[in-house]
Amino acid sequence: MVNVALPVLGRDLHASASSLPWAINAYLLPVGALTLLGGGLGDHFGRRRLFLMGLAIFLLGSTLCGAAISLTGLLAGRGLQGVGAALLMPNSLAILGSEFSGEARGRAIGTWAAVGALAGAAAPVAGGWLVDIVGWRIIFFINLPLGAAAGYLAWAFVAERREGSQVGPLDSAGALLATLGLGLLTWSLTEASVAGRDAALPWAAAAAGTALFVVFLLRERRLGDHALMPFALFAARSFVGLTLLTFFLYASLGGLVVLLPFFLIQVEHWSAVSAGAALLPLSVLIGGGSRLMGRVAARYGGRLPLTVGSALVALGMALYTRAGPGPLNYWLDILPPTLLIAIGMGASVAPLTASVMTLVDTNRVGIASGLNSAVARVAGLIATALLGFVFARQDSAQNFVAGLHAAALIGAASAAIAAICALLLLPSHAQPS
Image 1 (cartoon, rainbow, N blue to C red):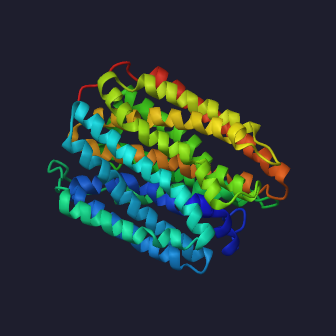
Image 2 (tube, rainbow, N blue to C red):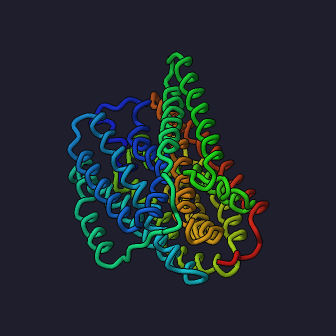
Image 3 (cartoon, one colour):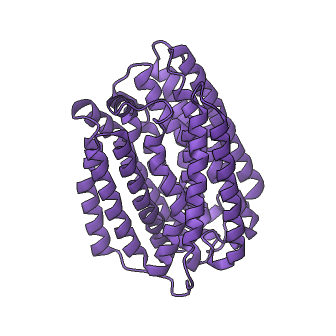
């Protein structure tokens, strides 16, 4: 919903080109940095407990966003939403991973992905309609009754699970290093997009963020099994391949879902609900295909669907270069590439998640799912930060479209790298659960 509300939200809160991406990244930053900690906390203290805690924090952040009277207030609420999501998301998936095995796990994860995708299908359209009719604040307040219902269902029907073998102190210092490093890198990328800005400070921030990441990795290596990101998970080539695939595929998708609605609203002057509807095939086909593809991946392995799916995403991204300034023909310029990306993601989401879950022991499922989710959010974080270079070109429609085309080609290259990772690094057969 925030993606389709971004233009009106930016105008209402007087957001500059460099600060506009932070309406997205203030959420993605804590999600990407703290999801690993959220998965570990669930393994230690109970997954249902952490899910409910994350949900409560998310709803508090939603309330702050809806009541915000300045961009600073909105960003504070978005950050709190991100902290809550970092707790609830990995634990929701870990609950499934620990309760099911074999093909049943594939079906469960496919259903989980399908329900999420179908909810996502409704969000851009409903959000666009609400923004057009009521205003952008309602897209945050609507989370309150939805979250209350989710909390009741989790409390009443989900059994508590924790892994008693997970002992030792949590790596809170590692989470802090990751957050600071990601924050500095993200800020440097968004600031570098501002024309006429002295480049010395963004470069210094990028160097500092990189240094913090190096310290983070050294610390994780030293901590071994008690690390926030245990290096032992990367002993298998297939897990490395899945991690790289996740990063490049979700970087491509993360840029698209932010930039396309903004382009349609800001340059082509579509309504928010129409721009949201343009993304409808993406979520519908992910939802429709995830349950089937979850079963396929559990039985035959994920290499083929992930290779083909990522390649289709690359082709669809490249076709967005046909869109230009002036009236668009939705059926020729927008729908075909969107359908290709939707089919590709529909073939990829459940196999990717199921493949990650089959590569780790049950007592590591929270960490593994947290790591995969964190990589996906970090990919979206970096992609959105780089969109600052496109948002800064709003001086003319022609310049903005040129930036859109460049972003589409970069997204196509990113998805193509994901396809290569799947083809070369993943096994051709299903892994035993």
